Length: 197
Image (tube, helix red, strand yellow):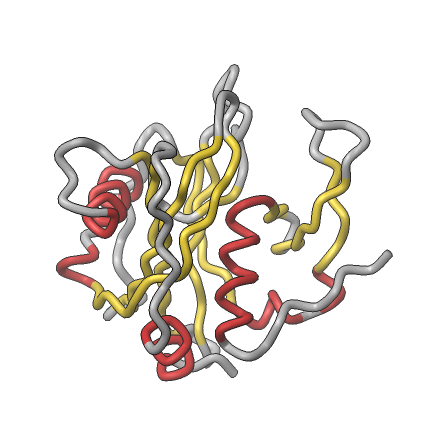
């Protein structure tokens, strides 16, 4: 389930919706590789825990804000992935396409996030995490289609609201990154399970 060809067709065969608004921009890298158990896995980071950071400890794809010197959002994703986890996608990966831009909240205003996808040539590359990243880890894509992994998450900083979430072996994935995953699985023709409730 979910082989390289499936991912490449899902990401590369339909043009992405690219936002043209003037909101601040960020870009992330969805990094895929062959799983040792067969199928495909996806790379995530766990953000470092920092005082005053509302996304402290959250799961995400490598990425960050677009800098003035970045040629485009793909360049941003490449640069941020290198800075955050020491992974040179130009050397170790093949760009396979781009998913739709999404808007996400920041403490002050909305931000537009681009999502570029790479296939990693070797799953055994050594990562070098910087101060922004607590951990980097691989998730087998089959975990996302298991209904038992989906639940309602109550974000502590917004009490009273529940959000769709996925339990990744004790780590909670929710928010914008889960919305990006949702878009990917829609393109794969395999929508994520409806969470219980």
